Amino acid sequence: MAKRSDFDIAGSHDRDILVVEFTGRSTGDNARAMARKYFEVVLASGKKKVLADLRLLKGRISTGETYFLLRDLPIKPTPVGIRTAILETEEEAKFATFLEMAANNAGLGIKCFFDREKALAWLQSP
Image (cartoon, rainbow, N blue to C red):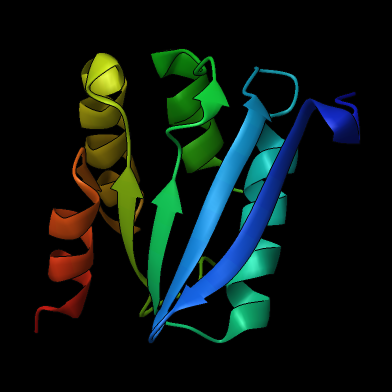
């Protein structure tokens, strides 16, 4: 069981966009708790545009763990109508590519970016 101190997820607002910042360590053990907390923050905000910033997060779960996490999300049904831009480091480009593909296959509308301004512009586009 993951300790709460392993990670933190905090939400703030930038105009009509919810900015969710992930800090701490990402592991297979705490991935479901992180996903659950993320959806709690998003759903409590009432926002439909989300910038999820993973850049300060240490470590990433494996592709297999990512696939199963997205397939078996702890929130059912998956919220609809939420557009999410994932902000990732260029060092994690391989993870970002897989995350985007797997999340979209799971029905989540996300797109990964390495540049904050491009991510915000995508969220504001029609």
